[in-house]
Image (cartoon, rainbow, N blue to C red):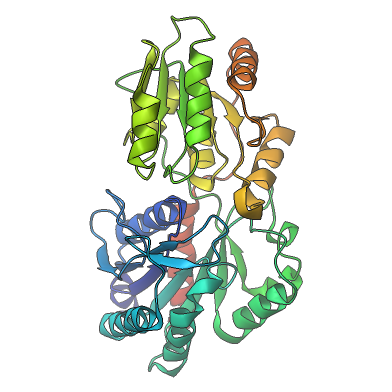
Length: 386
Protein backbone atom coordinates (compact mmCIF):
# COMPACT_ATOMS: atom_id res chain seq x y z
CA UNK A 1 0.00 0.00 0.00
CA UNK A 2 2.80 2.39 0.93
CA UNK A 3 4.43 1.93 -2.48
CA UNK A 4 1.22 2.81 -4.35
CA UNK A 5 0.77 5.91 -2.23
CA UNK A 6 4.35 6.94 -2.95
CA UNK A 7 3.97 6.32 -6.66
CA UNK A 8 0.97 8.66 -6.80
CA UNK A 9 2.69 11.42 -4.82
CA UNK A 10 1.87 14.89 -6.16
CA UNK A 11 4.54 17.56 -6.68
CA UNK A 12 3.76 21.29 -6.99
CA UNK A 13 6.80 23.03 -8.51
CA UNK A 14 7.01 26.84 -8.69
CA UNK A 15 9.58 28.41 -11.02
CA UNK A 16 9.95 32.05 -12.03
CA UNK A 17 12.42 33.03 -14.75
CA UNK A 18 12.91 36.77 -15.17
CA UNK A 19 15.66 37.31 -17.76
CA UNK A 20 17.23 34.19 -19.25
CA UNK A 21 15.87 30.65 -19.53
CA UNK A 22 18.29 28.94 -17.13
CA UNK A 23 15.84 28.64 -14.24
CA UNK A 24 13.02 27.14 -16.33
CA UNK A 25 15.45 24.81 -18.14
CA UNK A 26 16.88 23.40 -14.89
CA UNK A 27 13.45 23.11 -13.27
CA UNK A 28 12.12 21.34 -16.36
CA UNK A 29 14.89 18.74 -16.26
CA UNK A 30 14.06 18.06 -12.63
CA UNK A 31 10.32 17.93 -13.34
CA UNK A 32 10.85 15.47 -16.20
CA UNK A 33 12.90 13.19 -13.94
CA UNK A 34 10.19 13.35 -11.30
CA UNK A 35 7.59 12.30 -13.88
CA UNK A 36 9.80 9.41 -15.02
CA UNK A 37 10.11 8.37 -11.37
CA UNK A 38 6.34 8.07 -11.07
CA UNK A 39 5.38 11.41 -9.50
CA UNK A 40 2.44 13.52 -10.62
CA UNK A 41 4.01 16.91 -11.32
CA UNK A 42 2.44 20.35 -11.73
CA UNK A 43 4.88 23.09 -12.72
CA UNK A 44 3.75 26.67 -12.12
CA UNK A 45 5.56 29.10 -14.41
CA UNK A 46 5.62 32.86 -14.07
CA UNK A 47 7.81 34.05 -16.95
CA UNK A 48 7.49 34.35 -20.71
CA UNK A 49 6.72 31.05 -22.47
CA UNK A 50 9.77 29.07 -23.61
CA UNK A 51 9.19 26.50 -26.38
CA UNK A 52 9.83 22.94 -25.21
CA UNK A 53 9.58 23.66 -21.49
CA UNK A 54 8.53 22.31 -19.03
CA UNK A 55 8.18 19.17 -21.21
CA UNK A 56 5.93 16.22 -21.92
CA UNK A 57 4.00 14.57 -19.09
CA UNK A 58 4.18 17.64 -16.86
CA UNK A 59 1.02 19.52 -15.93
CA UNK A 60 1.50 23.27 -16.20
CA UNK A 61 -0.10 26.36 -14.75
CA UNK A 62 1.03 29.56 -16.46
CA UNK A 63 0.61 32.67 -14.33
CA UNK A 64 0.41 36.06 -16.09
CA UNK A 65 4.02 36.59 -17.09
CA UNK A 66 6.42 39.00 -15.45
CA UNK A 67 9.98 39.77 -16.52
CA UNK A 68 12.85 41.77 -15.04
CA UNK A 69 12.46 45.41 -15.93
CA UNK A 70 16.24 45.91 -15.77
CA UNK A 71 19.45 43.87 -15.65
CA UNK A 72 19.67 44.36 -11.88
CA UNK A 73 16.39 42.47 -11.34
CA UNK A 74 15.09 45.29 -9.10
CA UNK A 75 11.74 45.73 -10.86
CA UNK A 76 9.02 43.70 -12.55
CA UNK A 77 7.30 44.33 -15.87
CA UNK A 78 4.56 42.51 -17.77
CA UNK A 79 5.02 40.64 -21.05
CA UNK A 80 4.87 43.96 -22.96
CA UNK A 81 7.53 45.58 -20.79
CA UNK A 82 5.16 47.78 -18.78
CA UNK A 83 5.75 48.09 -15.01
CA UNK A 84 3.21 45.97 -13.11
CA UNK A 85 0.84 47.42 -10.52
CA UNK A 86 -0.76 46.16 -7.32
CA UNK A 87 -3.89 44.85 -9.04
CA UNK A 88 -1.80 42.72 -11.39
CA UNK A 89 0.29 41.33 -8.55
CA UNK A 90 -2.74 40.56 -6.37
CA UNK A 91 -4.41 38.72 -9.25
CA UNK A 92 -1.27 36.64 -9.79
CA UNK A 93 -1.08 35.80 -6.09
CA UNK A 94 -4.68 34.66 -6.07
CA UNK A 95 -4.16 32.46 -9.14
CA UNK A 96 -1.10 30.86 -7.52
CA UNK A 97 -3.01 30.09 -4.32
CA UNK A 98 -5.94 28.66 -6.30
CA UNK A 99 -3.54 26.40 -8.20
CA UNK A 100 -1.94 25.22 -4.94
CA UNK A 101 -5.27 24.30 -3.35
CA UNK A 102 -6.46 22.58 -6.54
CA UNK A 103 -3.28 20.48 -6.79
CA UNK A 104 -3.41 19.27 -3.16
CA UNK A 105 0.31 18.39 -3.32
CA UNK A 106 2.31 16.10 -1.10
CA UNK A 107 5.47 18.10 -1.85
CA UNK A 108 5.96 21.75 -2.85
CA UNK A 109 9.21 22.81 -4.52
CA UNK A 110 10.02 26.50 -4.86
CA UNK A 111 12.85 27.25 -7.24
CA UNK A 112 15.44 29.80 -6.00
CA UNK A 113 13.42 31.27 -3.10
CA UNK A 114 14.26 32.24 -0.38
CA UNK A 115 17.88 32.50 -1.63
CA UNK A 116 16.70 34.49 -4.64
CA UNK A 117 13.52 35.82 -6.24
CA UNK A 118 12.96 38.19 -3.33
CA UNK A 119 10.87 40.39 -5.63
CA UNK A 120 8.29 37.55 -5.74
CA UNK A 121 7.55 37.71 -2.00
CA UNK A 122 4.17 39.28 -2.77
CA UNK A 123 2.94 35.81 -3.80
CA UNK A 124 5.46 33.45 -2.21
CA UNK A 125 4.94 34.54 1.40
CA UNK A 126 1.17 33.94 1.06
CA UNK A 127 2.00 30.55 -0.48
CA UNK A 128 4.16 29.68 2.54
CA UNK A 129 1.29 30.64 4.83
CA UNK A 130 -1.11 28.44 2.85
CA UNK A 131 1.31 25.51 3.08
CA UNK A 132 1.59 25.89 6.87
CA UNK A 133 -2.19 25.74 7.33
CA UNK A 134 -2.86 22.95 4.81
CA UNK A 135 -4.14 19.61 6.14
CA UNK A 136 -2.13 17.53 5.68
CA UNK A 137 0.81 19.91 5.38
CA UNK A 138 2.94 19.15 2.30
CA UNK A 139 6.70 18.99 2.58
CA UNK A 140 8.31 22.22 1.38
CA UNK A 141 11.64 22.20 -0.47
CA UNK A 142 13.82 24.97 -1.86
CA UNK A 143 15.49 24.14 -5.18
CA UNK A 144 18.64 26.21 -5.61
CA UNK A 145 21.66 26.23 -7.87
CA UNK A 146 25.10 25.61 -6.38
CA UNK A 147 26.40 29.20 -6.64
CA UNK A 148 24.39 32.13 -5.31
CA UNK A 149 24.58 35.82 -6.13
CA UNK A 150 26.97 37.57 -3.74
CA UNK A 151 27.10 41.15 -2.47
CA UNK A 152 23.62 40.89 -1.04
CA UNK A 153 22.30 43.75 1.10
CA UNK A 154 22.82 43.71 4.87
CA UNK A 155 20.35 41.43 6.62
CA UNK A 156 19.33 39.45 3.53
CA UNK A 157 21.24 36.31 4.48
CA UNK A 158 19.76 36.32 7.99
CA UNK A 159 16.28 36.77 6.51
CA UNK A 160 16.89 33.85 4.16
CA UNK A 161 18.14 31.55 6.91
CA UNK A 162 15.13 32.43 9.11
CA UNK A 163 12.69 31.61 6.30
CA UNK A 164 14.41 28.25 5.73
CA UNK A 165 14.32 27.37 9.44
CA UNK A 166 10.70 28.44 9.85
CA UNK A 167 9.18 26.91 6.72
CA UNK A 168 11.38 24.58 4.64
CA UNK A 169 11.95 20.88 5.22
CA UNK A 170 15.00 20.74 2.93
CA UNK A 171 17.19 22.81 0.64
CA UNK A 172 18.07 20.92 -2.54
CA UNK A 173 21.45 22.30 -3.66
CA UNK A 174 21.93 21.33 -7.29
CA UNK A 175 25.68 20.95 -7.25
CA UNK A 176 28.61 18.72 -6.48
CA UNK A 177 30.11 19.63 -3.08
CA UNK A 178 33.51 18.66 -4.46
CA UNK A 179 33.21 21.53 -6.95
CA UNK A 180 31.58 24.23 -4.83
CA UNK A 181 29.72 24.17 -1.53
CA UNK A 182 26.77 26.31 -0.50
CA UNK A 183 28.78 28.02 2.24
CA UNK A 184 31.16 29.38 -0.41
CA UNK A 185 28.48 31.86 -1.49
CA UNK A 186 26.00 31.74 1.44
CA UNK A 187 27.81 32.62 4.68
CA UNK A 188 25.03 31.43 7.03
CA UNK A 189 24.91 27.87 5.73
CA UNK A 190 25.84 26.53 9.18
CA UNK A 191 22.48 27.78 10.50
CA UNK A 192 20.57 25.60 8.03
CA UNK A 193 23.07 22.75 7.56
CA UNK A 194 20.57 20.12 8.73
CA UNK A 195 18.29 21.01 5.79
CA UNK A 196 20.89 20.97 3.00
CA UNK A 197 20.88 18.10 0.48
CA UNK A 198 23.37 18.07 -2.42
CA UNK A 199 21.90 16.53 -5.56
CA UNK A 200 24.75 16.85 -8.04
CA UNK A 201 24.64 19.18 -11.03
CA UNK A 202 21.41 19.04 -13.02
CA UNK A 203 22.90 18.38 -16.46
CA UNK A 204 21.16 16.91 -19.46
CA UNK A 205 21.86 13.20 -20.03
CA UNK A 206 24.73 12.35 -22.39
CA UNK A 207 23.76 13.50 -25.87
CA UNK A 208 23.84 11.36 -29.02
CA UNK A 209 26.35 11.99 -31.78
CA UNK A 210 25.42 15.10 -33.81
CA UNK A 211 23.82 14.95 -37.24
CA UNK A 212 25.75 18.09 -38.18
CA UNK A 213 29.17 19.28 -37.03
CA UNK A 214 30.72 22.70 -36.48
CA UNK A 215 34.23 23.50 -35.34
CA UNK A 216 33.31 26.45 -33.14
CA UNK A 217 29.98 27.16 -31.43
CA UNK A 218 29.18 30.51 -29.82
CA UNK A 219 26.00 30.68 -27.74
CA UNK A 220 24.30 32.94 -25.20
CA UNK A 221 21.53 30.86 -23.62
CA UNK A 222 18.21 32.70 -23.72
CA UNK A 223 19.74 35.67 -25.51
CA UNK A 224 18.14 38.50 -23.53
CA UNK A 225 21.74 39.58 -23.02
CA UNK A 226 24.82 38.54 -24.95
CA UNK A 227 24.54 40.23 -28.35
CA UNK A 228 28.08 41.60 -27.89
CA UNK A 229 29.44 38.06 -27.42
CA UNK A 230 27.82 36.83 -30.64
CA UNK A 231 28.93 39.94 -32.49
CA UNK A 232 32.54 39.50 -31.37
CA UNK A 233 32.45 35.83 -32.38
CA UNK A 234 31.10 36.73 -35.82
CA UNK A 235 33.92 39.23 -36.39
CA UNK A 236 36.52 36.79 -35.04
CA UNK A 237 35.40 34.21 -37.61
CA UNK A 238 36.53 36.59 -40.36
CA UNK A 239 40.00 36.77 -38.78
CA UNK A 240 40.54 33.01 -38.65
CA UNK A 241 40.90 30.39 -41.42
CA UNK A 242 37.84 30.22 -43.66
CA UNK A 243 37.67 26.43 -43.48
CA UNK A 244 36.56 26.59 -39.82
CA UNK A 245 32.80 26.14 -39.53
CA UNK A 246 31.12 28.43 -37.01
CA UNK A 247 27.64 28.20 -35.49
CA UNK A 248 26.31 31.26 -33.67
CA UNK A 249 23.26 30.66 -31.46
CA UNK A 250 21.73 33.99 -30.49
CA UNK A 251 19.04 32.69 -28.11
CA UNK A 252 15.27 33.01 -28.59
CA UNK A 253 15.05 36.24 -26.58
CA UNK A 254 17.56 38.31 -28.54
CA UNK A 255 15.74 41.43 -29.83
CA UNK A 256 14.82 41.14 -33.50
CA UNK A 257 16.79 44.26 -34.44
CA UNK A 258 19.95 42.78 -32.94
CA UNK A 259 19.40 39.47 -34.74
CA UNK A 260 18.91 41.26 -38.05
CA UNK A 261 22.10 43.27 -37.52
CA UNK A 262 24.08 40.12 -36.78
CA UNK A 263 22.72 38.48 -39.93
CA UNK A 264 24.20 41.17 -42.16
CA UNK A 265 27.54 40.50 -43.82
CA UNK A 266 28.17 37.24 -41.98
CA UNK A 267 31.15 35.30 -43.40
CA UNK A 268 30.28 32.33 -45.58
CA UNK A 269 31.57 29.88 -42.97
CA UNK A 270 29.22 31.27 -40.28
CA UNK A 271 25.70 29.99 -39.57
CA UNK A 272 23.47 32.15 -37.35
CA UNK A 273 20.37 30.69 -35.66
CA UNK A 274 18.24 31.60 -32.69
CA UNK A 275 17.98 28.15 -31.14
CA UNK A 276 19.15 24.57 -31.65
CA UNK A 277 17.33 21.86 -29.77
CA UNK A 278 20.30 19.55 -30.39
CA UNK A 279 22.78 21.94 -28.70
CA UNK A 280 24.22 19.24 -26.38
CA UNK A 281 24.83 16.97 -29.37
CA UNK A 282 26.44 19.78 -31.33
CA UNK A 283 28.90 20.34 -28.47
CA UNK A 284 29.99 16.70 -28.78
CA UNK A 285 31.12 17.36 -32.33
CA UNK A 286 32.65 20.80 -31.74
CA UNK A 287 36.27 21.64 -31.03
CA UNK A 288 35.59 24.91 -29.19
CA UNK A 289 32.62 26.47 -27.39
CA UNK A 290 32.32 30.21 -26.65
CA UNK A 291 29.59 31.06 -24.17
CA UNK A 292 28.59 32.75 -20.98
CA UNK A 293 29.00 30.72 -17.79
CA UNK A 294 25.38 29.97 -16.98
CA UNK A 295 24.50 26.86 -15.01
CA UNK A 296 22.82 24.90 -17.81
CA UNK A 297 25.32 25.78 -20.52
CA UNK A 298 28.18 24.68 -18.27
CA UNK A 299 26.33 21.43 -17.55
CA UNK A 300 26.13 20.77 -21.29
CA UNK A 301 29.81 21.63 -21.70
CA UNK A 302 30.84 19.22 -18.95
CA UNK A 303 29.06 16.40 -20.80
CA UNK A 304 31.20 17.13 -23.88
CA UNK A 305 34.95 17.19 -24.47
CA UNK A 306 35.25 20.40 -26.46
CA UNK A 307 37.40 23.23 -25.14
CA UNK A 308 35.39 25.94 -23.36
CA UNK A 309 35.90 29.71 -23.52
CA UNK A 310 33.68 31.37 -20.91
CA UNK A 311 32.64 35.03 -20.86
CA UNK A 312 30.79 35.45 -17.54
CA UNK A 313 27.75 37.74 -17.41
CA UNK A 314 28.51 40.55 -14.93
CA UNK A 315 25.95 43.30 -15.68
CA UNK A 316 23.99 44.59 -12.72
CA UNK A 317 26.64 43.38 -10.28
CA UNK A 318 26.09 39.69 -11.09
CA UNK A 319 28.78 37.46 -9.55
CA UNK A 320 27.45 33.91 -9.96
CA UNK A 321 28.84 33.24 -13.45
CA UNK A 322 32.24 34.64 -12.54
CA UNK A 323 32.54 32.31 -9.55
CA UNK A 324 31.56 29.33 -11.71
CA UNK A 325 33.97 30.25 -14.50
CA UNK A 326 36.88 30.74 -12.10
CA UNK A 327 36.23 27.35 -10.46
CA UNK A 328 36.23 25.68 -13.88
CA UNK A 329 39.40 27.51 -14.93
CA UNK A 330 41.13 26.33 -11.73
CA UNK A 331 40.30 22.75 -12.75
CA UNK A 332 41.64 23.39 -16.29
CA UNK A 333 38.12 22.92 -17.64
CA UNK A 334 37.75 26.37 -19.23
CA UNK A 335 39.47 29.60 -20.24
CA UNK A 336 37.96 32.98 -19.35
CA UNK A 337 37.51 36.23 -21.28
CA UNK A 338 36.09 39.35 -19.60
CA UNK A 339 32.71 40.63 -20.77
CA UNK A 340 33.78 44.25 -20.48
CA UNK A 341 35.89 45.41 -23.39
CA UNK A 342 35.46 42.18 -25.34
CA UNK A 343 36.86 42.47 -28.87
CA UNK A 344 37.02 40.16 -31.90
CA UNK A 345 40.78 40.07 -31.38
CA UNK A 346 40.35 38.68 -27.87
CA UNK A 347 38.03 35.99 -29.19
CA UNK A 348 40.40 35.14 -32.07
CA UNK A 349 43.37 34.66 -29.71
CA UNK A 350 41.34 32.53 -27.30
CA UNK A 351 40.03 30.34 -30.12
CA UNK A 352 43.54 29.83 -31.52
CA UNK A 353 44.76 28.76 -28.07
CA UNK A 354 41.80 26.38 -27.63
CA UNK A 355 42.25 24.83 -31.08
CA UNK A 356 45.90 24.13 -30.31
CA UNK A 357 45.05 22.36 -27.04
CA UNK A 358 44.05 18.66 -26.82
CA UNK A 359 40.41 17.72 -26.32
CA UNK A 360 39.50 17.84 -22.68
CA UNK A 361 39.43 14.65 -20.66
CA UNK A 362 36.47 13.14 -18.83
CA UNK A 363 34.96 15.22 -16.03
CA UNK A 364 34.64 13.59 -12.62
CA UNK A 365 31.90 15.87 -11.26
CA UNK A 366 28.45 14.49 -10.39
CA UNK A 367 26.17 15.51 -13.29
CA UNK A 368 23.12 13.39 -12.45
CA UNK A 369 21.31 15.92 -10.26
CA UNK A 370 17.87 15.57 -11.82
CA UNK A 371 17.63 11.83 -11.15
CA UNK A 372 19.15 12.19 -7.67
CA UNK A 373 16.65 14.95 -6.82
CA UNK A 374 13.82 12.51 -7.54
CA UNK A 375 15.49 9.91 -5.33
CA UNK A 376 15.94 12.36 -2.45
CA UNK A 377 12.28 13.39 -2.59
CA UNK A 378 11.10 9.79 -2.74
CA UNK A 379 13.23 8.96 0.31
CA UNK A 380 11.80 11.92 2.22
CA UNK A 381 8.25 10.73 1.50
CA UNK A 382 9.14 7.20 2.49
CA UNK A 383 10.54 8.44 5.83
CA UNK A 384 7.33 10.35 6.55
CA UNK A 385 5.24 7.23 5.85
CA UNK A 386 7.42 4.93 7.98
